[in-house]
Length: 521
Image (tube, rainbow, N blue to C red; front, side):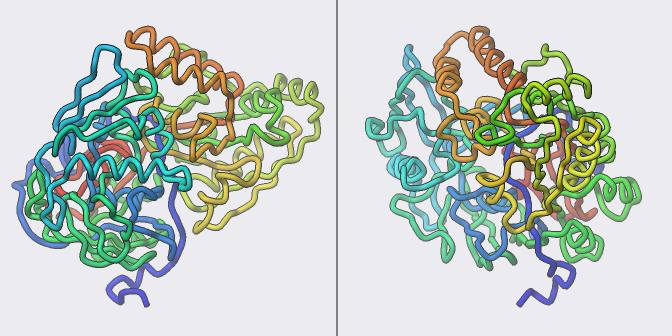
């Protein structure tokens, strides 16, 4: 049964593969335009329970932080657990459980010192816990999200050099090793921990109270957290898969925080005084994902034709109600290493038709998988179908289940709607574009591309490293499988009583969906 306090939250659905996108300046509406947090002028107050509504993953949800894939999973994981580092608003690695890190001259051995922190059972966080966590993630029999990111570490050779110090031995030099510590899903759990859904023990700001998969999770303030106890007494994560259910719950006072609102909803309520709207500008990559290992997209001429079919401005205006900006088939607009000098791609239907003719695909028919799982997906699919018709391509739009969409499209189909939250460009490559990446949705598998990634990682000089990343991006721009048409604003709604919500934190970064610094006025 659903909790009777949340009658508006009974409809089921699902969210998005938490993954990366462009993070530029973000503006909150509760404080002034330069405030770092919404409601920044209020005096922090202790106490109360905040209820936060997220789209979830149904009855199969887990609190295992190494399996965190959806935004709801990550929000719960960061409340219960910590990583050695996490991404700041500028996507640089910020120390968390790691107090400091330093490398040898050849960048292939890194010494990490842990800060003094404890798990919820009072036991200290030690080097042994860190090595256990990383070895668990790297288990070849498992498909944990952070596995590809941890690949450069030789975990057999790495060792504890003290209670709170670890020597990480790398398979090759890595100039940006701190990014590995901040990797999506690289949470630290107690040594030998295997059971996470009945009574998980972490070192995060909140400790476990209860969990009902697909419904809710309740966590209580951990007074001994190394970064200070949260102001809230409790946080309750409520699953509400339909955007309308999240909005209605917020308006009805059943929740105080609603994650991921549509642009039209934001416009309807912005500045009206009933709720606060926080916009994380250009925070979510919006794309069509072409499977490069199967027909028709195993022919790079067909992929290029699809790049040229897209009218990106029409997609941003129609699917995002203008709340975003156009993309250029590359991830991470505005981030470090982004290849900003490549010409902005424009629609060219004549050239698209010519390429399709060369590829023997003049009367191409293809199915486009979409779902109401994320804002703008169904609208983008309809707009792109109409754009493709002008190039002689017939697109059949297929609506997928919100509960299984993200797992289905990773391996199945040929063309699908896709989106991602923020991460460094290096992390996007390691998690999605290497031969062994666990979330390689475009099936982009090229050994020479893998070798360039290893070269970039091992290059000490930043200018030279940027040149390698640009080379990789030029190739993706020419023949990759992601048709990245836009970057959407990430929109959050809160009750007027909620203060301290970070307004400069793209989705997936440290201060996004972070509730240990939030309070109820």
